[in-house]
Image (cartoon, rainbow, N blue to C red):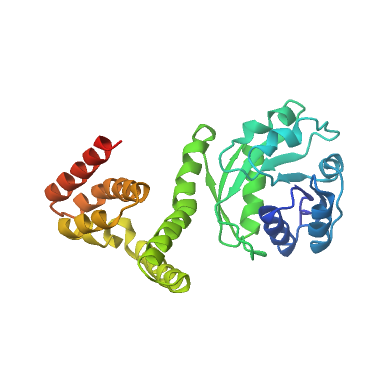
Length: 289
């Protein structure tokens, strides 16, 4: 049986920790951990039976180096790295960058890739990558195959991403994940303003949002859509808008309603009154600016 590649990790945040622990659980050895804050690197290294070392040492000791730092930090991290072994594969976890952000290493002969785990890394995650989808693209087919094999061993699924479309791909994921949190927060504040406690608001919103996600999973977004828009209840929507005395929140409500209309039309709802109402409200908002 072929020996598993040695893995190095640059970074010590949530993503680096989950990745390192998942790799160890899958039988990989961690050749070294680097972080610009040595104490953080030491904590992660101890957790996975590795050592906190320099970035140059990580690169020299590893077959694959995962770069798990913020998007903007990637170019700074690799800018002064001089490779002594060009057989090492360097892959970052960024959702927005392609492998081409690692061009300074490619120029030295290294193979490069991006392997983006499509999950929200929470505070309490441990070895949580099993079943995760990964957006994967690489400088060449052989590198893609190596990383696809690693992802499969972690229990994940690789999704081939076009390098030039990574920003659009990542924007879609950010909207679905990050802004779901934003919507929860906005709705929570509205419920508190309506007289509910923060605890009650959180509990009912979490239940409602989980039920909605279950319905999307069961029947797709169009059929999962509920509420006054799909029922054609223009009077209810008008009441909502009257209650939204914060102009930013009203604008958000209107924008979301506009983006919901294609699904409403697909469901066969008559939308003339709703469209007229939304346009009237938007025109009124423009007049007041």
